[in-house]
Image (tube, rainbow, N blue to C red; front, side, top):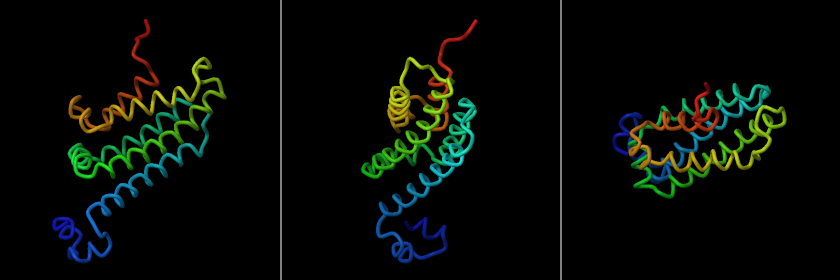
Length: 166
């Protein structure tokens, strides 16, 4: 808090007047970030959804831009020192992703751009559970990737597959 107060040009006492604890500050920062992600994705999914691949790419770009702002050490420390805040942020992220990708998948299915033999609910479950399992501090470190590179790989595999075409 000392470093943050100094960087903001205010006293630590003033900082604590706005945020009664480090946890409250962390929650506010994460909520602001998640609101930004939601607003970015809302702009994408409020427009023309006819080109499913382009909309998915735009949603991915929104998420990737936001993930580039987050350093792996921050996520690791948050997971270690503020597990309840980490879990709440993860739950909120899941809701945002489910809402926006769900709109796109449902519209893509309606337009015939997605397979009809797999329900959009299954598509969402696979996507969300993959994101939940890979986008963890331990897995990011294990895979030696940044969060945005991990997300990029997940979405590439999900939407493009892994089998090459002759």
